[in-house]
Image (cartoon, rainbow over all chains, first blue to last red; front, side, top):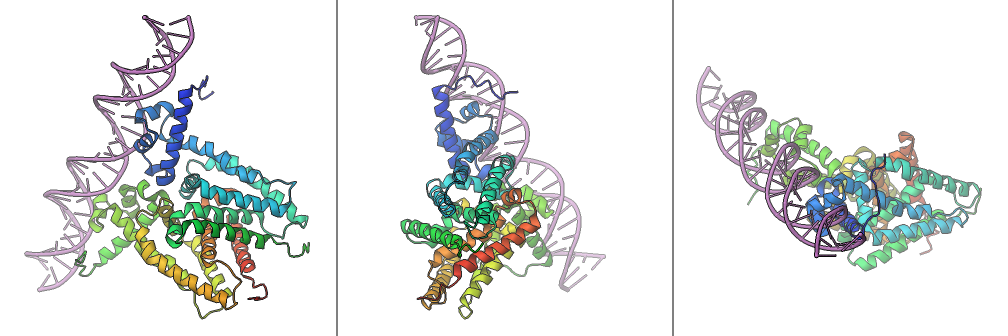
Length: 210
Length: 210
DNA sequence: TCGTGCCTTTACCAAATGGTAAAAAACGAA
DNA sequence: TTCGTTTTTTACCATTTGGTAAAGGCACGA
């Protein structure tokens, strides 16, 4: 039943698995699943193609392993949304963390984007089992905050979509943004400021009219 | 110098070129450039692979032709932003048209998304020559509206990015949205209502304090 | 130091893929 | 109908790609 005996991964195994995952992230995020080749990944990982297969069962296995490994880390900011905190602060913190991740880990963002755009053929089940419950839970939390009059009335699902859309846009469509905005560094500052003000405006309680 | 003599395209040529473009849109938007195969496109177009090559010079030529043909149509809503109109109406109309296109032409949206995410390797020049001028022009227009006190102060570039991000999200990440939202039809209604209210809120003049 | 088992390389392979050559078929003006 | 042109098919081809077999190298404990 267990997929692998999994005694103890040797130091070499740990190092090489990591190398492969990193190389795969680079290549998959840039070309998508079908556009990426094992040769490219092997090259980026600094090892031979058969050696890749020694560590992973095949191309799809690498991709799936990568998505699984990143999923948790990628959802961490949403999971950190704390019910005991101040609603506005919590959501703004979430937004800021998402912006931070777009700037610092664009490859991860694009990896997911590629997968989702193409219909989530390999990550689909994990969306159901991993993302959906978390999403529902946090929607419930936001709904409660709204009922308590601590946030203006909004559709929580749509609010989260909006946050995702705006923040990830800067990573996923970086190529476009770079064409349209002259100064890259200034662009990030402007983006951060704008996004901050957008959600401050949207979440500004209009008098808690309940 | 002219790429083709281009006498008069016969009826058959017109019909088949259209078929190919439509099939290519379907396949490219689903798998990305490198993930799409000529066999798939030929299949979807209901003709043989060599017949494709008879009408287009090759895979890349089809892709480029497709992007070029769609670019204009895709930018039409932005181009329609009218300086003589009421700023709020103009922008809300723009947002609505973008939402409409996301719902009705998700393939077009995903085609561009795929291309941009992967670094715009084939459409890059067209972004510079086609999108950039239009973008700059409309930013200028919005800036003027703000100066005239007819819109609250905002960074025009970032505003447009926000509109793109939110509206296209529903097409590009449809697979994800479908997992997270139960009722698809109701989902679209909720999305439209939410997006409308978001931009109404953001663009609500706070007293034209100028 | 000497195996024993983990790691890596070399040499392949079958299928898929972008593309070509050239013959056959269909079309259309005279 | 007939002849030249346009369109389509059949049969290929070279390269790329995911993957395998098996031998060689290497590290490390006894």
